[in-house]
Image (cartoon, rainbow, N blue to C red; front, side, top):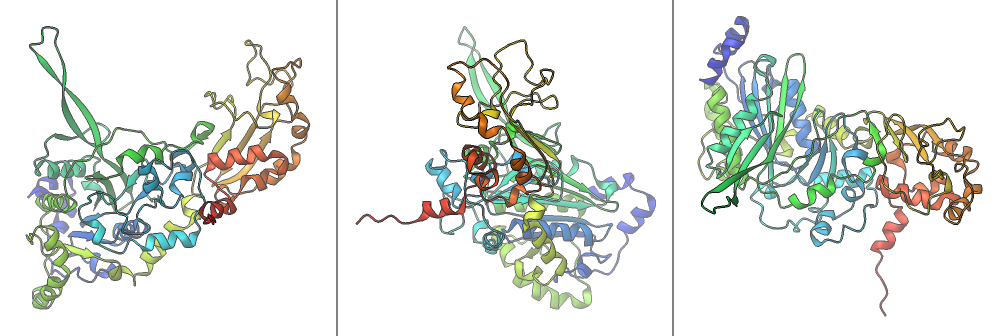
Amino acid sequence: MALRALSNRLPAAYQRIIFKRLPAISSRFFSAEAISHPSNLVQIYISRSIDPYLNLSIEHFLLHKSHPDSVVLLLYTNRPCVVIGRNQNPWVEVNLGLVNRPGVLSQLRAGSAEPKTTAGRRSDEDESRLAATGQSNESNSDIEGDTDADADADDVLLVRRRSGGGTVFHDLGNVNYSVICPPPLFDRDIHAEMVARALRNLDISHEVRVNERHDIVLDVSSPHEASQGGEVSETKKTSFKISGSAYKLTRTRSLHHGTCLLSSPHLGSIRKLLRSPAAAYIKARGVESVRSAVRNVGIKNAAFERAVVDEFVAMYGPPSRPHSGDETRVRSELRDIDKDIRRDMDGENRHPNVEIIDPEMVAGIPSIRAGVTELRSRAWIYAQTPQFVFSTHPTAEDPRPRPDLPIDLPAPFFPLTTDPGLDPNSESDGKSQPGLQMTMRHGQITEVSIASGPREEPETGENMRKNENTEKGDDNSSLVAALKGLHLHDIEDWRSCVGAGNESLGRWLNGLFGVVPRAETQDETKPTDNS
């Protein structure tokens, strides 16, 4: 058994524990007592919820409640959502204007979402309602075409997970895997290799491997241009990422989870959803994602689940069997709950103790309910963001060039010097720096700096338009006071924050940070009278 081959890496005391024969109990009743029992050393679960907040809370429960010497496999599929890492910045990683727009996936398919990059902000109640639609198992089957049968199927949720790593997009066309094990068994490749072997066993037409970043990639061969003589044709290999990983380590447990792109119909939309219009103006302390070309494997969810379960069992052995005294009763109970997995495994009930988790099984567990509440909260999604600085112009700390600003912004946003020898970041000329700079901690604006006016330059026809607005920008102390202390994720209209005299600035910030006033959202949905 592969587990015994790994045992030489473990302390002797650990080997005695893990291989000791103990009375087994069933994990049929998903509870802290069942999953923490010392006989439950190998556990396999498949969640049939598609609520990402619930699935991550189940995973968190298993991480903290399972027996320290156990190995646990959890498989689950989520409804469309963007999942950012524990230490990431949603204003950098995500186009919030698109993600928060109802029905955005259908709009992206139709091309109608492209002109706009802002949308109305969903309330906490809306988020809860949308996530609650992830209670059906119907959408975990193979995906063919659109999923418009569900009214919310084309909405995208925003999720912050508890582990590190980069931002990923989930939908019904990929399956997420999570392996929890003791720290002595953990390394960043061992379970990625397990998943790669599972894919190879499915006779994937392209090479599957784990790369140096611990991602699973598909090496796709394609014909290359022939040599000059036309006799020899070369083959070019292109690597596509199909699975990325993230990790969470505690003193007694290790978690490795990842997602595998199988048949997502939204590959063309991922780049749009994960491209923030505000990123060019933000210097963040958190982790930034490494962007890669992606591709579907082209297999069914059920086939992937079966293959991963097979590889996990090959490594660690089958799940624990029920205690002999309760075997008849428990097998009768398992016969009912295993109908889903027998169907998914093409009628082949290879591992009868794989436990199917549905929302009703975990609804009564207080810590899972609390986990869902926390993950859905805006305080967790946004206020957990590490400190970052927004600046409209290059600074000494962030000298990157900025995109061109809208021409209707107030004059303080435009440095008027045309001397190529003068550093626009230098304050040696005694003038204030152009534009707006804000420091945010946990999503709250803690420092604000706004230029009091443009730099001196002889007035010419080229800059007269900008100087017309100088008077409005001369005294911005009230604007600084108005912005300081605000939470970005609570702002419903930047125009009301910056004041009527800065209408163009408020409109521009709405676009960058993904905000559209509720009144405008209602106007868009209001029926027109054609009579």
